[in-house]
Length: 50
Image (cartoon, rainbow, N blue to C red; front, side, top):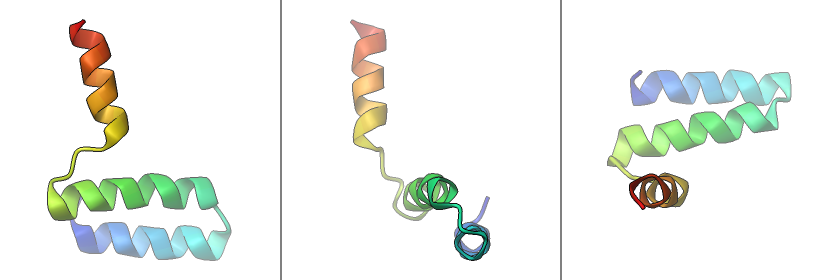
C-alpha cells in the first residue's frame, strides 16, 4: 500500500474514532515511508533466532 493511501486511511480512522487502528496504520506508514523497522520487530526477530 502506498504512503498516500495509508494517510487517507488514517484520516478516515480518525473521523471514525478508532485510535487503535490509527496506531496500526501509522506504524505501517512509517515502515513504508522510511523503510523503518520497529523495536517490536527487532525484539521478535531476536526471540525467534535465539
